[in-house]
Each structure stands twice: as C-alpha cells, then as structure tokens.
Image (cartoon, rainbow, N blue to C red):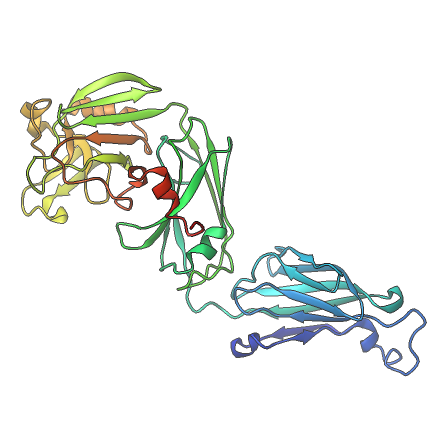
Length: 389
C-alpha cells in the first residue's frame, strides 16, 4: 500500500482533490488485465478542505466502511457517512495550520475490503482571533453575572460564531446570547438568563470555535469554562433619593447603610438602573481627569468596588461624612463611611446586582458599560442574538 504525505499550497486548496492509492493499485498483479476473484476495490478520494470547511471523503465503485480523521495531537475530527455509504464529511470544520491524517476502510465490488491512509495540511491563518472570558473559570459569582466573551478582533460572522457557543446549566436555565459593543469598543457576546440566576446554578460554556472564521480572523482553538452561582440571592438596592443602600438577601433586607451619591445637576451625577459588581479592587488611586472631570480629585480610595467601566464605584468616602444619608455630594460614586465600607466590602460578591434608583441621574447604565444587560427587558435582549429574527 502506497502512503503519501501531501502539503497543499493555499492557492491550490480550493481546487485540490487527492485520490488515495489503494492496496490493489500498488500491487503490479492487481493492475494486470486479470482481476482478482474477490472483485475490484473502491476508489477512495480525500478532498482537503479550504480553511473553515469540513473534510470530505468519497468512494467510487464501492462504499465507506470506516473513516477516521485525526490531527497531529491525536484529536479526532468526528463526522458521519451519508445515506448510501459513498461519502463522508466531518461534523466540524478543519482548523487552519493543522495536519490531519485520514484512515479509510472501504468495500469494493464483491465486498473487497481496502485500507487507505492519507495526510494533508491546511494553511496557517493570516489573522487569528482570540477571546477573553468572564467570569473566571471555577469561580463563584453573584446572581447577576452574565457569561461574557470579549473578542480581540471584530466579529462580522456573528451567527457562525454564536452557533459554536454552547451553554449548559445544572437546572435548565433559560437564557440568550446578545451581541454588543464593549466599553473598550471591541465586539462582545454575553449570555444572560431571563431572570437572575437561581442560587447554586452551575454553568458551563463549550466554545467549539477551532476552525471558525470570525470575519476578521480565524479561531485556532476551542475554549471551555465554567462557574457556580452563589448559594444566596443577594441584591443591593441603592436609593439615591433617600441616600441609602440596602442589602437584600434571599428576599429579606438584612442591612441598611447611609450613603452619598453623585451630585445632582451635572456631569457628577450617578448612573441609575442595574449595575453588576464587576470587581473588588481594594485601595486604588482615583483621578478625576481619567473620567473627564478635570482636577476635581486625585486620591487613594479604600474598599473600592467597581460597577461600571466608566468609573462608577461604591467605596469608602470619609471626606463626605457629613453628607451620608443627607445629600448627594460625590463625583458620581456611591460613598459611605470607612466602617460601613469595610464590612460591606467583605459581604458583597462579584456578580451581585446593584439596583440603583434616583430622580436626578445621568441615565441608565448601558449594556457594554460593565454588565448592563439587565437594563433591557427579555424581548429586547433576545433580539440582540445573531440567531434570532
């Protein structure tokens, strides 16, 4: 049996069709006018795919018994044989820059069985798209944290990409993907439930993206991640009109803290709507120039809890002590005493929703400014899926 290894140049991939050599063709006696008594073998053809297309195998003058396609790491590219048994195609697309080996068992006339083996390589991707996943793998988060993917390069083939993103939950949670622009300007896809997660839900993402064209770059690997929702449903309610923050745990208010929000009437107002706690950043430097407020402040701030990418936090603000519970006098953040901030910081979890109300605010938190998807109703959120409509 003749075995060959062929590397296909990029400009020939689309038109290439490789015919595997059969055992009989490699045997001089099999090529003689006298055919063997057990019949003629099938002619097997392996078609190397263009990037992002499935591998295809066909048999002329017979049928395919088994087809196995593996990459250089030994990972199998599963597929199926069509009705009639004369053609096979991989379920998944071939990945760029990968060498595949195809092993075929076919049956020809009279049931003659032949084994063929071929190898080919796909060209390297000219552009590679990567992604960043949140929340982190094996973390535990609050009931409002979406599954969020930020892409390094633009995604114009959104439907193709979304089809490769499979979310599994431990309790059959209803949810949907939605496409948006991250605050950074990059493309982002979030999967959020219809309502807040049920406590204790386990969530898994299988992103089988290897070999998928995003439209401005290829994915060259798969991704898998998972996280768990906390065992208690904790919601933080911030009433800017009453200058108070309430911690609601499993439907019961367990604590109320006097606060001071953003100064009314201008750019220092706070956002309203639902913001999700993105990170507990501890002591950080806050500089008003970074958020377009000139030289209003430049100071180290303790117990900082990020709510938006645009710079809205909950944090300790001892310099505003006389305003807690009395007036909104901050530069947009939700300030509280050192003592309250310390204990509150210890009790909240990344992914907890902050439901913020108030008459004089600068608007509702946008979807991409942190995790603002909860400010859209369910129908509006579903409409942001690339696979709907």
